[in-house]
Image (tube, rainbow over all chains, first blue to last red; front, side):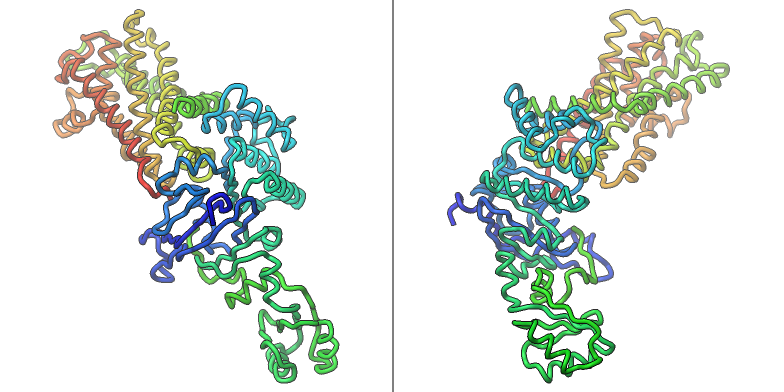
Amino acid sequence: MPSETVAVEAKGLRYSYPGHRRNRKTGPSRPALAGLDFDVPAGSIFGFLGPNGGGKTTLFRILATLARPESGTVRVFGADLGSQARDVRRSLGVVFQSPSLDVQLTVRENLVHQGHLYNLSGRELDGRIAAGLERFGLAERRDQRTKELSGGLRRRVEIAKALLHEPRLLLLDEPSTGLDPGARRDLRTTLESLRAAGVTVLLTTHFMEEGDRCDHLVLLDRGTIVAEGAPGDLKEEIGGDVVTLTGPDPEALARDLAARFPGPAPEVREGAVRIERERAHELVARLAEAFPGRIDSVTVARPTLEDVFLHRTGHAFEDREEEAPG
Amino acid sequence: MILPVYTLWRRELTRFFRQPSRIAGAVATPLLFWLLMGSGLSGSFRLPGGPASLNYFGFFFPGTIVLVLLFAAIFSNISVIEDRHEGFLQGVLVAPVSRSALVMGKVLGGATLAWLQGVVFLVLAPVSGIHLNLASALEAAGVLALLAVTLTALGFFFAWKLDSVQGFHAIMNVVLLPMWLLSGAFFPLNGAPLWLSLLMRANPLTYGVSVLREVLYGPAATVGSSLPGIGTSLAITVVLGLVCVAAGLVATRGGRVD
C-alpha cells in the first residue's frame, strides 16, 4: 500500500528483553515480540488487544520511539522509525498509561511546555492551547494544578497535550485503564471525532469492550499475532453462538453431549461445558429434554472477542502462567 | 534547540518555588550542620599555618556552601528517575527534542536553583568573619555557578544511569557525600594522615573548594595548604565541570531507552 493510505507499516518486528532480566523460573526468555507484521490503515481506529504480558506495552514503546526493535522495520507515514526518528516524532502524539503531566504545574503550563517542546510559541501556541482547552471542556480548569484534577480530567489533559502539535497518528497505551464508565464514553467520543478529522488512532487495550469498538483489531498473545481483522469478522469465524452449560458432572455431560449431538467438540472449562453451535436456541430445548436433571443452567451468548481468543490460542484470555516484562 | 532548553529550565524553577518544603530543606540541613559544627569545634579548631582569627565557623563556611550546592543537585535529580519512567520526561523523550537539549535544560535548571541557594547562603559570610566586597562577592558567585553546574551534571549522570531511587541513594552515600567530606570542606588537608591526604588530592572537588576558600578569604586562608595555586585549581575545576556535563550528554545517547 502507498504511504498515504498506510499510517504504520511493520515488518518482522522482534524484541527480546536483555538476557539478565530473564525469568529464572521459566528458563530462557522468549521474545516479547516474535516477528510481527502489520499495516495500520490511515484514518482508522486500530487496536492491539491482548492479555498483560502479551507484548502490547513493548510494541507501544517501540512505536513511541522509546525502544528499538532487535530486528525488523517500522515505517510511520513512510518515515523509518530507526533512521528518521525525528520526523516520526513530529507526526506522533503519545498518550502514556502512566501520567506524563507535571502535577505541580497548571493545566495551561503543562500545555505551554508541551508546545515549546514542539517549537510552538507566541500567538500560535496561545491559540492552539485555547482551542484545545475549549474542545476538551477544560477552559475553566486552565489555571488549576493538575494534581487537583480527577483521573478522567487528567486523561483529557493528557490527550489535549498529545494533540497540541496536531499529530497525524495518536498512540494511546491502555487509555481506558483507571477511567470510570462516563470518562470511558468521553474517550470513545473523542477518538471517533479524531478519526473523522483524519487522525489515525492506534491503541493498546486489555478490555474486550474497547477492542470491540476498534475498526481493526490485532489480537496479541505471547508476542505473536493470533488473529487480525474487524471485530465483527473475527467473531463471525466462531460460527454461531456460544452455549455454556453448568451441572453437577460437567465432564460426563460433555462426553454424552459429544456422542448425541455431532458438531464441534464441547469443552470443559472452569466447571462449565462450552459449545459453539449455529441456531443455539433450538439446541437448548433439545438439550433440556436429552439430559433431564443433569443441567443446572444454560447460557446462550453471541461470541465475544474472548471466545475468538480462546478459539485461536486454546487458552483463556487471563489464564497466564507466566508474565513477561512489558 | 533553544525553546526546549528554555522550557525545561523554566519547569525546574516553577516546580521548585511551588514546593515550600524543598526551599526550606535544601538550605536548612547545611545551615544546621554549620551552626552545630561551628559551635562545637570552634573552641578546639586551629588551621595549621592559618591565621589565628579563623575559627571553625569561618573554616567550615565554604564547605557548607558546597554542601548546599550538593544537596540542591541531589534533590533536583532524584526526581529524574521516576519522571523518566512514569512522568513528565516521558513526553519529552518522544518529542522531537535532542537528548542534549534535554540534558542542558535539566542541568541548567538544577544548577540555577543550586546557585541561587548558594548565593543566599553568602549572606551569612559576615557572621563567619568574612568581609565581602563587590568584587569578591562576584567572584564567589562565579565559582558557585561553576560548581553548581558541575555537581548538578554529576547528579544527573548518576540519576540517568540508575533505574531506581534506592540506587541513587546508594550513590549519594557512597560517592557524593564522601566526595564532599574529602574535599577539604570539612577538615583541612594539612594535618590529615598521608593516605587520607592522598585521597583528598585525588578528589577533583578538593580544588573547587580551595578556589572558593581563596576567593572568600583571600590567599591567607590557603597559606601552607600545599595545594596548587588558584589558577591551577580553577583549571582543574573547569575540566571537572566539562567532564561531568560530557558524561551527562553521553549517558543519554545510545539506542535502547528501556
